[in-house]
Image (cartoon, rainbow, N blue to C red):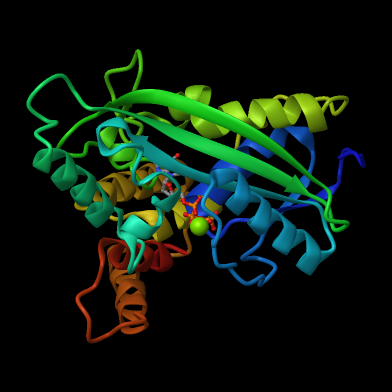
Length: 292
Ligand SMILES: O=c1nc[nH]c2c1ncn2[C@H]1C[C@H](O)[C@@H](COP(=O)(O)OP(=O)(O)OP(=O)(O)O)O1
Ligand SMILES: [Mg+2]
């Protein structure tokens, strides 16, 4: 088995900016040079398998073959017990079209309601993450992580992505959407799968303590803006922008309200779908664009 060493270029084979951000955070202390499939312009493969392992392998192998670099993919989802494990491996499909997780969460709610599952104790669910590391030779390794919890309605919080606002992990009272990212990373399914990956593939790479970030975290803001689905997430995003302005205002090119509104106007004129109702994330992206 070829090993990953300090400085190895590693493709994060995902097109979900929230996931890419989380995986890059997990990898950062190990000195791997992580680049996302999107950054490399790799196509998003069709997920034709029926298991997390199958789809994780398909995504990692496609990226490794296309890039000639070792690639790490995640296939994940939420399994709702009263729905016999649905949406499971089809979690992303429930948000189609438009990757709208407001709608996906509503469907989980409605299907549980049809079964009367909201009347008793909170419905239980778990997230699964399967990571696959693939080499250009086709060699692969798989790692699985899981976190159990309960579902709440209505969704709460604007952090994270996907189904985070309706999932409360065991032992917590806040949803993943309400927790600070560090709270989610301490226990998430992805972190647990990553721990297994780390034991097998990163042994011998000394972890450096995570460097405190300095300056604007534009990648984090961009990931949040591109991912959000609900009004609460937009509100949370605006709060992050305000925090960023308070801490890193010196790095903002716009220095007064007139120039900010001017930049916002330009961003609004560039919106991709001028005739359609804008989505919450369209507004978030315009606000972020106006600040840089
Ligand atoms: O931590 C999570 N918090 C909330 N929701 C989550 C999480 N982890 C997975 N999920 C849900 C949403 C996601 O869209 C779907 C995975 O679908 P999945 O095909 O693996 O990912 P994706 O299509 O979003 O990105 P990609 O395939 O390019 O990696 O499950
Ligand atoms: Mg996918």
